[in-house]
Length: 458
Image (cartoon, rainbow, N blue to C red; front, side, top):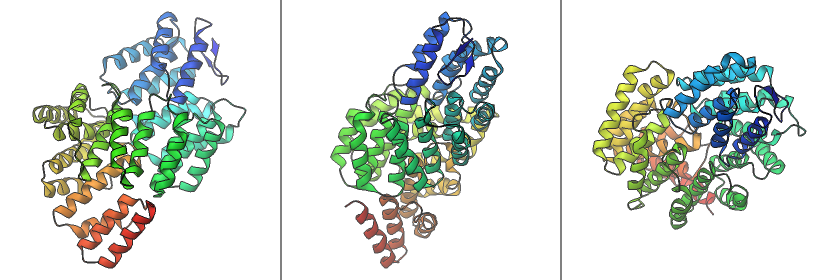
């Protein structure tokens, strides 16, 4: 047996295995290094290290690859083959990994929460639950999972600051911005390299429309998260959002070329960022040149995976934007076959929300705004189920707003924004609300919304 840095026992045959596990967890907290490679190299020489295969497979799933990925299947089989000779806690981890691999991420998150009920210092369980809830848009569970174990922690326990960052992000996604910012900034005080804590604060600033603060905050912390190879591209993406609102388009293009597009085909979460930023720029009327073309080549490796509805939507957007009609047809056929042949919750989400969203985004890109509005408007309140953050999903609101206005449905655009504009008064949201108000003839209210948006970027 081995004991990790949090005092938890796990099964290992070699004394050096614990150092490799601790190192991989450190990298996981910082989104740095090569935790997958380190864990696999260790598991291949330690026949009892089931937890290594388990965490490796989870990291691949949370990175956005589908459960059909051959490496995920190999790692799941390797973990299951060792299940009967490990501790009950490790068995529970393996069972949760197996559940996640079926596309039942919310249930898998609940299984990791069950581990935390007995072992509140199990950071692997806490991170896995956090990732699951994020990927299926379960903001309530995302918040509750971290907050439930927080009383059992203090600064004397390794990773305490990182747990604060996780709690901050859960609070932000639930709309509790003041407490989220407080915990996120405390997390960064404890560990300036905590890029997830930085991420949580960046979200708060974005959702509250604090444009100049958001730019200054991310510029000011950039040196601390440059080693976060698995998240730094996303933080650059976050910086681009207020920069777009501020009209700094040349800098946005430069950041995209230098810091966001430098990913490979297996970095699905990074590919999402690339697609989303190019789409947002084109919504603003910005010519992005041939940047879609390289994305098509990388996204094409994932046409048949359907790991998450969020990724499927971005894949469809990339294919249609680049004019890859043949590949788009293959993707839609594959998606239909997946829906018909799979009974998981993931397949149900793709069927009810993901597919109409894909078709709506495709229709919008083709200029059929009426069809886009008809497809996306009925599911607008359910889009959260495809996963991602509120800030990421805001792109679909922006697109739907354009579709509604261009198809003569200004009242629907106005009514869609009215209930939430005070809770999340971002510059882009206020501008869209103002445009909808103007289109309905309420110019006074429209001018007030425009003035508020301008004030946020000066």
